[in-house]
Image (cartoon, rainbow, N blue to C red; front, side):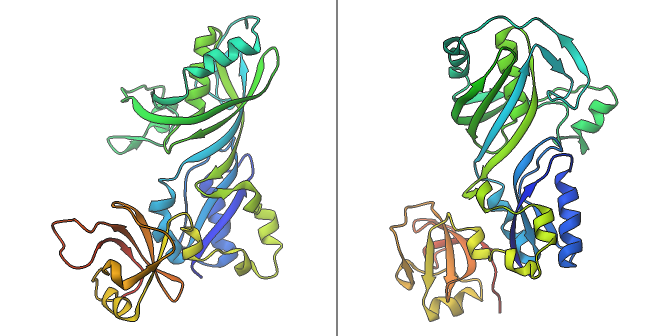
Length: 301
């Protein structure tokens, strides 16, 4: 069994909890997920099975979309409702225009300081383990991109937003930073991932629904479908044979539906099945054979 599942993760579970359950359902150890969701969070969690784990490196690089609700007036050590309260402050009266003005500053390319309660590592130790010991270590600011930050609804102390963002964006940090600009602090109370790359919440199954399927294999997307957002290039027979020996194809050996530009990640297909992921690089200097730089090959001699 090889491919990709689209799971709607429930609240209260870790992403690895989902992986463990999928291992039981499909009776295989080779399972991994494509982007950690905190236990508080719900929504889109791509889970790879078998050789599907070989495409995770591409899924992890994709943009994400979220719906987040946060409460003003209270900060916690984890930046969400699962942490310990650090400070409570009165919430000032505000208008929708004032809220919008604050949000403007978080659109586009911004710098974020990763939270201590995160899976990032310092000298091989996850930061959250250090945080639980009461330790704080220096972290470097990271540049992320918020391509959309839309106010969905708000009340006197609660705000719901939707965010489209680049990989590595911490919504908890975004909420904390918004709260600090308000002058009263804030913490995340609900988070739902609506999209991961091209995969939307409408395509996902809950674990309960997956367990009830008579044929769980019917829920598994092929490796080619897992990378559907990359343009496809169908190899001719000569190129297909050469690829098995690690030789990349020339442009004239492939059939594409759209024009490829230098640097484009491409699905190389044999008989409409994923054979490799490659970058179109006709002008590269190291490898003179073919017009593509092979990144991950799924066929071999």
